Length: 181
Picture: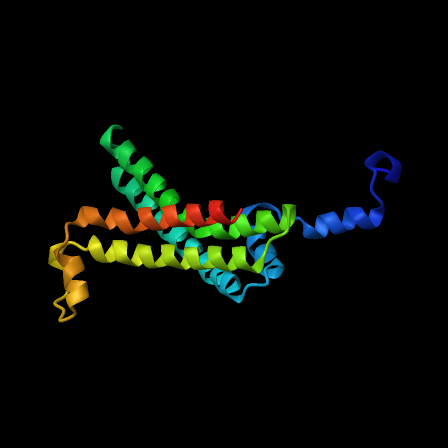
């Protein structure tokens, strides 16, 4: 494109390209570089690695389910495959949402260290909620004996309560974003 056709000088065009990030993977380094919040920067690295690991594990579980159900009729097996994909998305998306929000905000309107730090903290809360969900959903036959009263309390609760911490943490993440925008 020529300078007259685009309305930008070559330097402005290059700056726009340097500031751009291409997709989800490009948003991580962009948000980490653009943020002034150390808390968010650490979450960007840890949250990104954790999201990648969890996505990889869900992919492996999907491959295992497909391998175990090959040659069978649809129905329940198709549902179980779709359910693994859905749960993987529900777990991974809130892990990457703070980074995507900070990257988008830095690119469009500019962000504040307060917003970045609040989303980093909300991201860490979501990571903690995933741990609590795992603790709550451990089947009784796989629970190890413990003298810790808090862990024992989580063991004694029904497994369905494992949905509560990530749901609440996801809601907190959304509310922090909405409050600070």
